[in-house]
Amino acid sequence: MALLGILVAAVSGLLMSVQGVFNTELTKQGGVWMSAAFVQFTAFATCILAWLISGRNGSLGAILSIDRKYLLLGGVIGAFITFTVIKSISLAGPAKATLVIVTAQLLTSYLIELFGLFGVERAAFEIKKLIGIALAVGGFVLFNF
Image 1 (cartoon, rainbow, N blue to C red):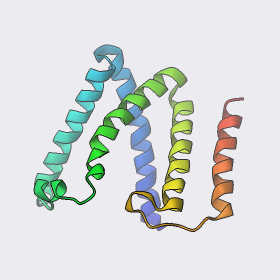
Image 2 (image 1 turned 180 degrees about the vertical axis):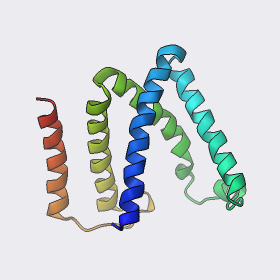
Image 3 (image 1 turned 45 degrees about the vertical axis):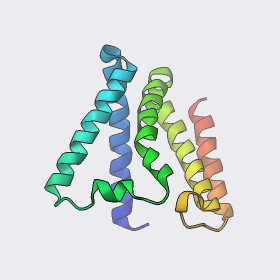
Image 4 (image 1 turned 120 degrees about the vertical axis):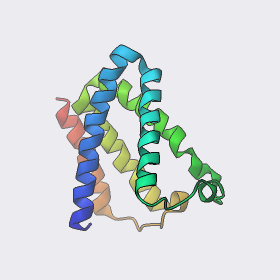
């Protein structure tokens, strides 16, 4: 992975952790579904603004005419991601919840690559990646003792 990719991924992880805490605290005053709706609405508004500023590359027509319609479910999945992050942080705390979330992401992403799901190029099985996932699970166990 190129250095820029690593830096962008690190910023993504940082932002996800901060957002999870913000969203969880927001629900204490606004309720989980209203808070999730507000978060999704402000994300939508931010994306529209960024689209307008960035030169309007892409169009709604192009998005709606894709051949694999299930790919349009990202927003629906995003709503449930927001909900489950909020609930997991409120139930387990930010660090434990994030550890489980990241471990689950790693396992799911590897399975998607391994089986070539959803149009992703199929990757060959590598024992070192399986060991890496086992280490992540072991880290979770160690973290909880």
